[in-house]
Length: 502
Image 1 (tube, helix red, strand yellow):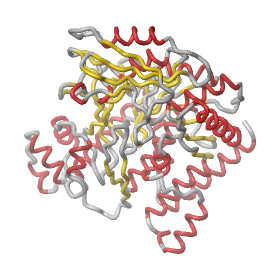
Image 2 (cartoon, helix red, strand yellow):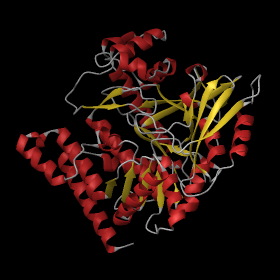
Image 3 (cartoon, helix red, strand yellow):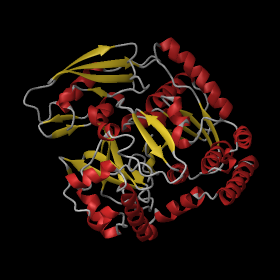
């Protein structure tokens, strides 16, 4: 490691420590606690933290009309808690276990009065997100939630790359604003500019100013973070020009970690294979913002000569889980989140596939309790070789991309693995025409490899016919590009709403 790396690491650490003392912040200490609590010796501390946080969260949630209505629907008697007395941990667990999961639509219809707790001058910030589904949701966070978000972000980097300080990171998101606005801090790029603004308008004493300043120090001093524009593949020639520009920026920034939309990682790996451009400085890549199936990641690892790590999170929740050396399955940050898998309205056993439901244990401004994030996944049963004993989560696709065939769930991950196992596929989408008829849109590799269309079609027909009463027919089409969604992301499957998991 270079002298410059250590200078940046320890100067950044000194600045953060000074700000933590002056600004009464704690995210660096929280990140250390997450490290301790993720191993087997920290299991009891983890359980204790979760119990305390759940109790505090439900007590605050009782201030909201919507949460109290949910308890009434579940047949829970409030007792003395309805008069404002604190709910103990045992009673909190009882209340929690009886709540039914909720989605974006239910929260959005009661926003803001029905879902926000009383403002206790805790530095609240509003943020809107649309996610893959396109359903816009406004989320309110407070100072403590943003501190927890920064702690989990540092923890994710440490688990994934063994570094959290001093690393050089480049991001290529499908939507730049989602990466630089809201929970991660203001869209400022200069620490000094932020300080001058705070002194000029008198906000330098506020918790919000200190929180944003900590975020800027984290992004600009603790490690170097660059954000590049999204890639838009309208043709092979357009993409080639964009690849050349993007690789030039990567060469200039020389990131240790590249975080990007999965499709971008595949295109970059194809470009490197074709042009033989160097990337010896790059050690890890991390897909985010969309599903990265195993076959896609295998192609990226092979072409770029890097390790891949999965990270799972959402704009409204922040970082929820991250993979270690074992690639796909991700360790849940259990101290901050309760992750459950539901199917047919009930929690399923570990190992079974269902809808991912998450409780944010740290956001008391707008409690998200048993919140349906819109993803399909499962919690793995086996222990991880890395020594961490937190639960591990595997994400298999979006709800609207999961097909139900006579009780059998066909996930986007299974479909993607078939398509991307063929190196001639640069992008694809499976569109449902009728119950048993699909159109397969395939974008061939931009760099000269032709896909085996008949093999892909045959394997997908076999997969989609499982549990069906009639054979599935797939009509393939070769296209120059696939249209992205309005948020810049690509769907693996576009199914009719009647076919979605309910």
